[in-house]
Length: 302
Image 1 (cartoon, one colour):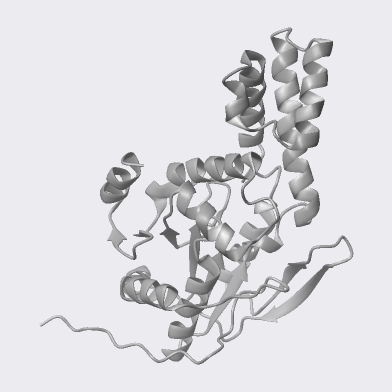
Image 2: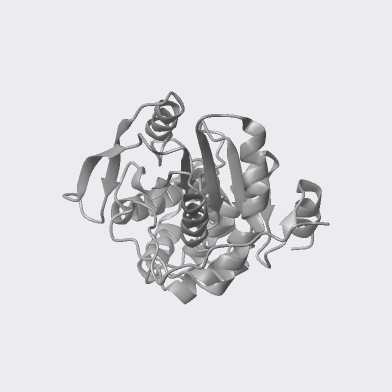
């Protein structure tokens, strides 16, 4: 007879990740998804036979990483396993505002270079492009249907942005990998970075890991090839359309409907798909556990 796992009831509020100012709202959907993941996660943890284990909960923006990671951590603590949730969003090289500016700069610089390489940057096109910049429409694919030069610009800009997003140019993967290595080595106290939304909001806190056996890294880039030390990557899958719907519901920024945001989400999704083969657990948006073969079939339909 297959035993149906039982789960402790969650209180109104539970501890969450260490991103300053981060607010989570755990809903029934997050709880059900955590409950689908948890038994498989415990099996994989047991198979590792390690004193300490590092789990990554990764996926697209707004897919529920923070909430599901917090619920998993709560279940582990209730089972007597000391658990800490680390937010990877503390480790970009720039504060969010400055990173958003840098993303746009990289895209536009790449687009301009593409036009220069093909000798297309005439004074007239330069004027049109500046107008598109002012209207924040230079990433809108609709405009490229009428302007061949804009198609060149957007293709080149996308290539440049792909070389920035989720790479060491944008994120200090080395610092995170060093933290994970020190945790694996059994260090009992480790300084962790804290980052707010202003340049003055940057500091480190010494965290006591003496009773911690599991470190959960909740982060879009938790399954990246640039990150070392993850034992069990958990991928929360979503399509770009689903991710955008999540962002609109959470109202994470003032430009969730912009063409540039859609471009960023699409590039992010392509990178998550390329990394998915490494995931130890994959969960669909509907809460179904997927094999990698099932995942590929699902994504092929999108």
